[in-house]
Image (cartoon, rainbow, N blue to C red):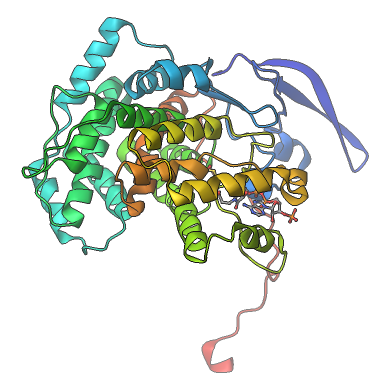
Length: 434
Ligand code: CMC
């Protein structure tokens, strides 16, 4: 059994006059779940739960999230402490290994990240064969899947090589992301450097030029570090559940993560950070009348939603959003662009929405994506790369969930059931009689 759950009371279910006792599982933070694993065998019934709003797909030791109280912990540590005191590399280690690294462990992990930062020369040619306007998320997903061809050792015994695979992915995805950007505008590639931190290396690979050397700004590096940490895990969200589901068929780590990247691409998930900027730019282009957009968002007959607001689980506040908001103020100030009109519109939208009955009643607060795009824009990341940045941050979370799923004593291939509502069996009609 993976988790230290205790079975407390039992839930009583009465079906067709017959009583069934279902165990109640209690998590370490007091979350309660009715264990229905024997339900179909015992009763012939299944449950239905579109969007899995009430379904726990696993027991996990990685991330605790309380949407009502606005709490997010990785391996027991509060997100606020981790964002304030750690590097993304430390947090990645924490997520994958379960403990914060000692000095030696961190040094060793950094060495691996350095060692694995290059990609196979053949893969560099892949970039030449995508159309120049190919969305970077599609390139990233394909390239990560292709890594399994170049590093197939994991197919034999994946967990023996987990340290190498983790370092490879965390390091190479950064290189792939930067290379895809450089290729998209026909620029020479900039190789990773052994003497730079993870974030400084990424910024340098993105922006250095022989004719205009890039100087890493500490404030920018720190904001990027925070953003990656805040995105590093979020328990069973759509992309992480995808990684687990695909991996549950015993697919290799690279292919599972490639599927997670595809899920993250969606505008209701990781793609929202790009959509927020489109929305802010549209409001700006239309004279900055943000109130009109609040009215549109509230109109049931208008499909428009205030992007960057609302969350499936946070019904109080998104603890990541506040940290990102503060980081955005700092970084914009240090770059001398704190009069950015889009930041101003974002502040005004937030202010009005937080007091508006519609948003208050539905518990709609700014989410992680609301301010992250503003930081990315200020530090020069193009909008079509925003979701790639999210993927870069989420990588250690995906890896730790894949690893946990792989070793879970309760592992089963993911295979939900359904309630069939189509036509009942009919007599077949041959083609000539139809
Ligand atoms: N603007 C206006 N109304 C909204 C919004 C919004 N952003 N979000 C939810 N609502 C309304 C919705 O219309 C519904 O109203 P009613 O009860 O009158 O029908 C009510 O709030 C509940 O919405 P829901 O769609 O049932 O909530 P959900 O938990 O299924 O969806 C969500 C969560 C994040 C998909 C949704 O809030 C949304 O579409 N937000 C905008 C997109 C966005 O910012 N996505 C990023 C999420 S955070 C990053 C990540 O996890 O990937």
